[in-house]
Image (cartoon, rainbow, N blue to C red):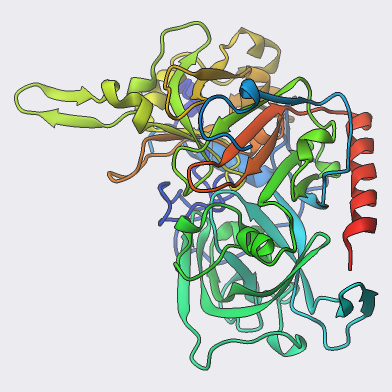
Amino acid sequence: MNGCFAAFLILFAQDACAALLRRESKPVPVVTPLLPRGSRYRQLPRPSAPFMTTPGMEVSPRQFQDLMRHTSTGRKRRHGLRKSLFGSYGAESDVGEVHGILRLEDLSSAEYVGVLGVGTSRNCTKNQTSRGEVCASPAAELRVVFDTGSSDLWVASDLCTLGPCAFPKRHRFNRSHSRTFHQEAHPERFETEYGSGRLSGVLGFDDIFVGPFRVKSQSLGLISEESGDAFAAFPIDGIVGLAFSALSVKTSIVPLLDHLVEERAMPKPEFAFYLHKDPSKGGAVIWGGGAERLGLHNGEMMWFPIPEERYWSLSLQGFRLGGEQDVLDLLLPQKPQRGDGPVFFGQDRPKSAVLLVDSGTTFFTAPRRLFNKISEKVWPMNCDKIHTLPEFVFTVGTNLSNYSAVQEIRVPPSVYMIRNAFTGDCMPGIMNMEYGSHDRPFMILGEIFLRHYFSVFQKGAPGDSWLGLAPAREGAEAEKKLLLAQQMTDSLSRP
């Protein structure tokens, strides 16, 4: 614990569960893994009940251990405001524009996974459609993480000989079981470094089933070696990157979302996340557009342009704690100046800092200098008193050609504080994450945030991609709307 309670510092979870899908090639650094490098893999039992709860978050025992172990040391308008900044209200439900819903399972309150079909079974079931007879049975069904912080598609395969993907009870895609699999005579090898470890393998091509959609000859990484403790701790069979193609390891690889649209399997390159705070209900990815009309959010959708189409980022122009003075300068880089010591790039702030929305990161993040400032005002305490803590207030740009056009995203302590169900105390769900010398300064809104905010991701023409946010609707009525939409889209979209 390094005396974290004695020092009353915010605890940071620099673990692979907290940033499972962080790649070194992204403008986000690799996070400290769950176990020291070289540790033996070990399978963790799934807890029978959540270890930590909060109005906004439940965390597994493993995540809590790592929180305790780490401390601070360590749609289409190019100009103007989109829909006058605000979009549709969430009061009415309309599934007419929704094209597919994929339910997600919450693994031990640590990661959301959904089923991905890979390949075409040699003993497939054939269905008759207007396009003729098609095979609708995948060769393998794998549980994968849908990650807005990376672009590549990786699946555990029969090539795996080393690491968690070789565990006896893990699911793997067997190339010989698919009638549509193909690859080059000398397949290209590549690898991706994540916060949880490393995936390496070869490039292959096969049909992919996601929700009610199917795309042919999708490029995918066939995992032959897998290292990392989050992969060992949870039954994750692959990763589906949903960010922009610029983040891909290979420039020739077309991300799955883009390929679905290119092949006209999906009408629009859009998707949305709805994550339940109740782990037993999981969540959903909503594909193809129209998600904001399902009635899964309260109030108005706030729409933000994407300033750099590599990752899903927002133009971060300010950050403060409650009503205090803006402290975003602490996020920006320091530059040694002859004889004067460090100076801050405050004058370049509108063009410098970004706020990433990342479904592959569990917590909020901030670099050390900004984190130290936050720790002066936010620390572990009795959960009955967290109402005394300040809000996190992010000032985000809504027009890339006019930096004075901004909107505030306000995050109350009921969202960012995590409750230990055993002790009754709460601790901040934020971790220290530094950025490299060539990266843009950033903060991250992770899974904790997404459990409270309905999020819509819209890819457009270059310079015209948007991200929509609104408070998520909760309760039985929201679940009823989601189930109804899923039933209707399944019946309409399956071949």
